[in-house]
Length: 559
Image (cartoon, rainbow, N blue to C red; front, side, top):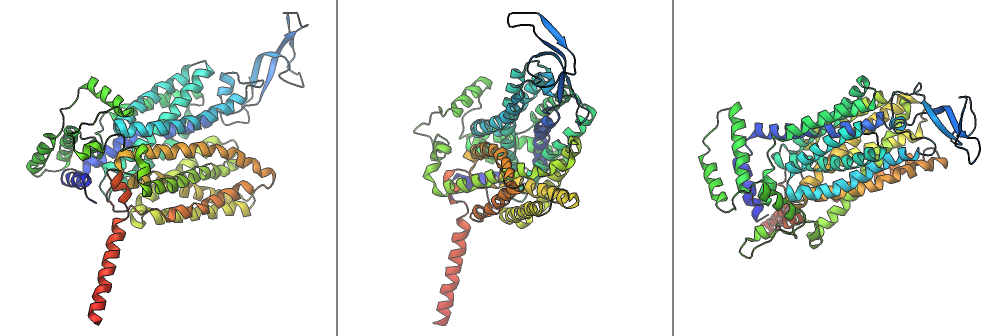
């Protein structure tokens, strides 16, 4: 590949690749600063719980025109919503929780549908937030959008805990879910860009381990704090801490390069030098300083806060102007270097289609894997902790095997293993827990590996200028289609195992598009759409040229 990316790779190799401790520090800050997302995600298991209830104080009019009320004994039978009730009693004796939003917001007598609405808006917010947040990540930066998202989620989580209005509660929940999707996309893009070629998979796997640890943390916190309002207050405090942690993160040098912000790249390099100086004695950095001095002469002065806000606004809505005297690389960062201009690059379009299928299938299977939840009955804490352990195990395995075997092979093996787990649950009855439970946990481990790869693999395959935008598109489409899961579950009226059979077929079918995706192991990240379109073809061209040269040499030897 030729162009600006060669110069970029030279800068990163010369100035950042030897900053090993700085890279680890940035990944650590990003991972810890994003951990709260999974903690909040599973917290709904402990407060969106339908609780049996009955009335102990009935009131109703003596006639149609009467305003007088009469109290009826608590042994009233029949339609519990035929008359108004002055006091409901919620029975938690058979549940593993002691509070629910159903009681807090009095979702009774037909209002139970708002419980389902509460679950649905999560997917809507997550999908729309991922789509818009992915665009923001490409336009204003990875770290900036993570900081904004952390602050908003912390503020609105506290609002959810304190408000007595269901409308405010569910609106805050929807917005938080959108920003959570944004954090995931920006965090995976950031860790992919911050690490060297050999470290990329490992640092991204470290992020996955931290995120999955959030599941376990939520289960443990909920054991101590059974009241859902107290639980959300603690999570909100955790989110504010995560926001403070992200203030120490440096922006991705790759993204800064795509925006011609060389001064900020230099500042990140200075911070990297300081971090390395804490661990080892640094060699002379004079040549690197000279390199940055040459770059800084080519860029505009750093903007102040207000100018930065205005510039971000223009970038979001493609209002930034491109001058005729600007270089070709600068012009590439205009509107054409976005999803709008992807249609000109057929390879990228085909890969986006195949990766979308990969994402959609993964999220459909994710909810199918939860078939093991019934084995735990109402033991929500145990189920959440075990699911978290399965996810962490999958993330840890990813840390060791993805760099060794490659993205494609690990994806294929994980999808095949998932199919086997689904078929095991089809063949054996749910009463055989000694077989079904291990299959469920193994499926959760494999799914975590696949779930990790749907972030890492596209992040390495897609160019820097559209990396988070494409991830946001994948997330949006997969979240929308995951709403089909409840309808798939209803098919069990025809055959108990039909939903699992459909998910098994999906798992097998996903292998086909994966076969056509290029391997990204040990490959440089593409910088712009042109390089992204050529990605994966250079190695094939070299192999073909070598093979042709060998054949030619053999023919000459024969002659």
